[in-house]
Length: 84
Image (cartoon, rainbow, N blue to C red; front, side):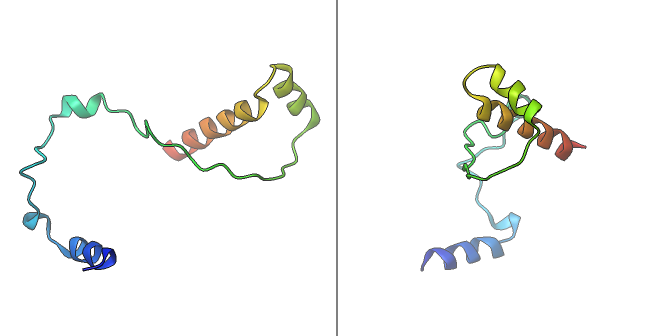
């Protein structure tokens, strides 16, 4: 059975047919301390964008790493928008 067939078979299973004996249910206290996407590392893409000169000057004035700071600002705003 190839991988696609295995995935299709698993997708067609009912929850009641899944053996969870080796993965016991965790209490809510464990999930309350969980960190979302702790090991997630997004793929970087190179793009050309136009930003206002004063915004770029401000980012660069903080020293090296302005692209990382710009990405962090955009990610924070994206996550805020996705939560609302």
